[in-house]
Length: 180
Image (cartoon, rainbow, N blue to C red):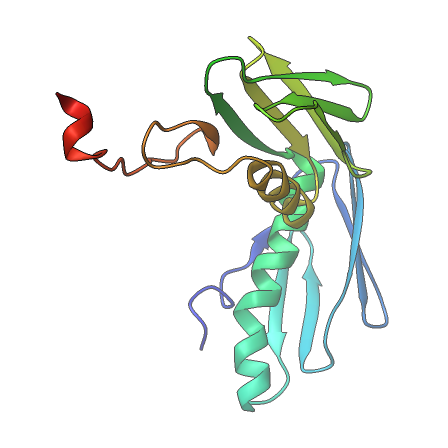
């Protein structure tokens, strides 16, 4: 049995879970999310908790069991608490500005980069070098953060670029003659 899949999902106050055929819908104070469940997996609602069970012991159902439990658990957490990712910008003259759903980044290119945030993700810029992304869909939030980071990945020599707040960058030594 899957270690992740066998754990029940606790449903907090104000969150409702509905199952309509193969679709699971989760509504909460921050919004609503839905996901299609594969036919090998069954979702059962027991009062204040949700159980994700597999219908048989096939290879695919064992593979999908823990995954679907984690995805449905992230949906419940997202609509109740939400998710947050923090990006930091390092480099002289590098900065960010958010207006509406457009994130304007000055990253050392000849022009500022305009990045349009997808529906469901909001950005707040603190001190022009810290970008806080928030949303209820963890998958979409992580993908958005990765795309923003890819606009100027951290280079290992000076450490300039966009990085996650908890990311450590392995620095490389420059040329031996440059130190003199």
